[in-house]
Amino acid sequence: MASPSLTHEFQYASASHQAQTAIAGMWLFLATEVLLFGGLILAWIYSRHFNPVGFDAGGRQTALWIGTVNTVLLITSSFAYGLGAAFLRIGNVRGLIRCLALALLLAAAFLVLKFGLEYRDDFAKHLFPTDLPFGVSGAAANGARLFFIFYFIGTGLHGVHMLVGVGLVLWIIRRARRGHFSPSYTTPVEVVGLYWSFVDIVWLTLYPLIYLVGRN
Amino acid sequence: MSPQRQQRTLPPETGRLVRLWLALLLLGGIEFGLSFLPLGHRARPLVILPAIPMIVAVAVGFMNVTKGPAIVRVFAVAALFWLLILLGLGSLDALTRIDYAVTGLH
Image (cartoon, rainbow over all chains, first blue to last red; front, side):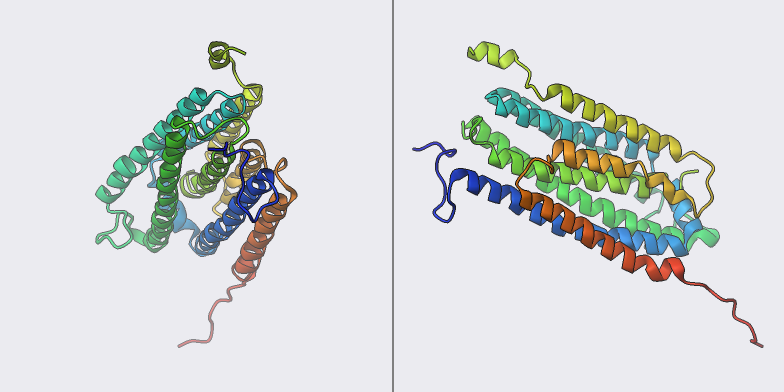
């Protein structure tokens, strides 16, 4: 079987052309994702503008330490993935696998903290927007409900993206263990890396909107 | 290079990636610290500002937006452009609306 780095599908002029098309395709997909999350950010701007007190009250109910630790976990996870891709470029497939395993471990820690611990506490504190009685009372209650609608949709959507990313990284690890990658064939690793870092960018946007803006 | 030596060698990009990682943690720390400043309700969204260089750093440092084919930069700029249109036009009404008090009732 010919090396994947040398072969290409008939519609491409060369293997390099095919690789560049794959990378451009992922960027185009990410551009549509920017607009998906852009709608969510617009909802935050609009809702917070008319309910600043309620949004701040909602923000103070969130677990700052979990949000902050999760930010560090995701930044480090992107770093681990980037280092893994760099290992592949010098021909060290074992280094790639180890770094990707670390990235997965960090992502798993993020998901456990977010959905295993933080969501559980949120439900216990009656912060789900339909809860009666709701966890925030008084004049700020309605605004805080709006905040938690944003919170659950934003973090839920991000969590779904993370789960997809975990599946993709597992797929890359499986292919790497089977010897599918080499310094001259890194395209799938790079394409999944783009998605992995984009999920990081989404969190870097959500983190201040949810945990920091209403804190003080 | 022998396979054993190769296993021990760090990639040449390691230093750059470590510096990027540390810069992101530093900016995250600044953002975290800013959130405790006593700002008014209207000024608090300024806390988000350090997230902008963080996002740029991830896009440039981890996603290599400046190094890929030119079409990648076209897609990235188009995404930013449409995001600005979405956020700008979408929030224009809310941010510029003047709410007048209702008078003359009873």
